[in-house]
Length: 318
Image (cartoon, rainbow, N blue to C red):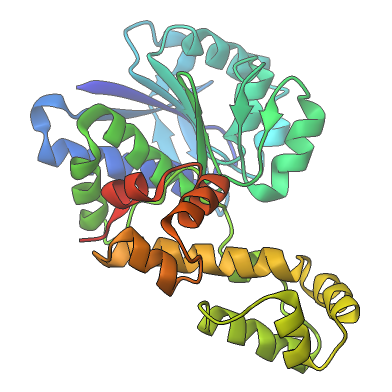
């Protein structure tokens, strides 16, 4: 069994532990000969209380772990930023990171990896709300707030909470292949395993709802008619504004430019088509409004750092 040591502490996020643990346990049901044994550990044994008040009993102190470790997984929590002052906890994470086959963090667990020196010179992510602070505190790490998870060598970091499940599925896929990871995801009644390069936000979440009703209607028109002429002149005419005024007001009220919003909307539709249909790439490009497979490829590389064909092979939902 592959030993997974999940590092906990007072105030950790329960789902950061339970989500990945269920992924690894589900995998063990399918491949018992090469599964995982998840072991919660902490700086001290005994009761450890998660944020929200649920306590778990930790029987393993980090300092007592001296056997082989397959995966060191540091969970996140609202208290993670305070836990960096726990020298025993940080020191043991640093020690085990040096002997584990791979190291991972969920959400704000990245603070503890950074404090332990694991993220120095590496690209990493965390919950989008914490990314700017993490980058400020640890300038030697290259923090990217967008991806669901990032792999840099043998170090993996993920975004917040549910992204830990995607991270764990990615670790399973590395060990056992994407087909098995999809089976585990289906067993957990997940729609699909999201790729690491996918933004933490969907298109609607990344753009604010405009205050003006005509612009809200225009947003809905863009999302519902991706193959139409969605150039700035065409959208400005539809909104009854000059091009300059329209661009300024749209950007001011949504937080993104009209062109950027249109590309994101089309890219998100293309992603959904790849996940849920067997349409050839040229049809996906046409129906999503991206036009050609070449444009589809460029947009996918820009948004998700993966080719559309590779995305489909890994994450098609059927």
